[in-house]
Length: 96
Image (cartoon, rainbow, N blue to C red; front, top):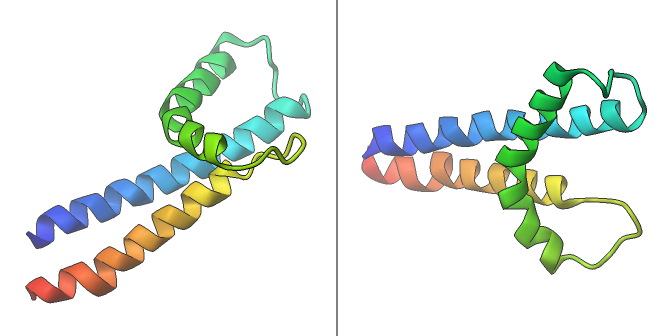
């Protein structure tokens, strides 16, 4: 059972870094720091969008419109942090 919780913890850790990469990529794309016409850059953007958008969409539907500011990645990161702390402090010690 501990192995399952550790696997979930590490999957959340990877997803946390994907969220951070997606946010940085969107900033670089928005400020024209990276070449938007490159097929490689577009494929990275599509992959990050496909991985993160299914999680962001329900949160965006729940949050009010903040005038172009998207805080759904911050909300998702907070949820990931909470789940990781829950696993480390609440679930794993019960099985030791």
